[in-house]
Length: 325
Ligand code: ES4
Ligand code: ZN
Image 1 (cartoon, rainbow, N blue to C red):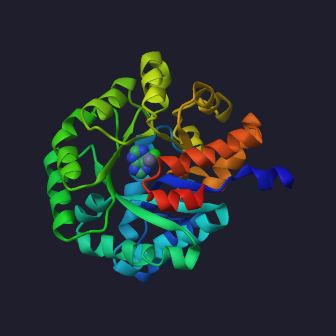
Image 2: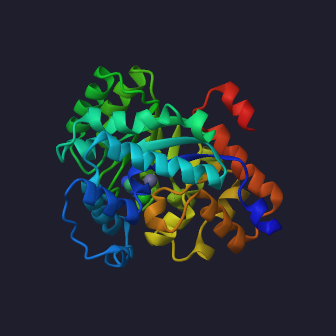
Image 3: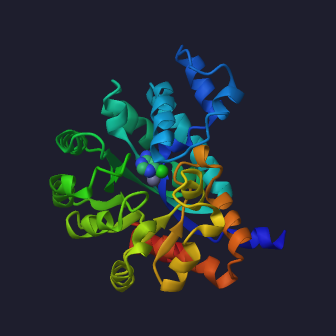
């Protein structure tokens, strides 16, 4: 009991895909509401498909399940369900990614997805005690020109985003293709993050830093294959957003015991613990903390540091960060 209470420090969740919080029950509820015939017989049949061999095997299900998100209310319900659960997990601040482009290409206007999510984020601090920021993530397995067009539309409509990100299938889709997108985002005053080194090589992490000039790296676990890069990440205090259960479920690591989180702590990297796509990977941020605590037996000081690093790595205002620390 005491160990459980110690397991989750006050923290910011800064690597979360809101579409990855869509739980099987809500998928069925939204399908019924929108008159959609799901390709699954029942909840059990859907749940049986949550066994992944790599990132792509997960992405196939993730994009397919998004089909139930049709109206502003659907996006709002999904967002509210996440925040309610995150509040019980000990999350005090969240920077969530959404994939507006993924919805746009299946015919859902940007206004629908963005307004649905934002309507709930606006009230989050008051309703759940969680401050928020929204990150528009772009799909690296789609043309860079399309991403740039979507960014321009988001800017034109005044979407309240604080940053952009880069996600979806990594290997073969290098950061170097997205230089113009990131230049434009910075010009518009946005912060920047990118998935790199989840399945891809450390050179993708270097590209994200050198060419995209990102403020944080999402995942970045393959940096350990390049000692000079680790040294640079430590020296320049580049935060890496780590998602332990995700890495295990997508077989980026062989088992939790093989996860490099302890080495990363030993190197002095700024790392945070995050849930990535909690509905798909077996748990929310508290489940991630509990699991790493069980497997690695982290000290109270190490757990506190993970919480503090997450807050320091966030894009919250200096005032809010001081309040959270
Ligand atoms: C994602 Cl785990 C992960 N990796 C890359 N792209 C993603 N989109 C949603 N989850
Ligand atoms: Zn992710």
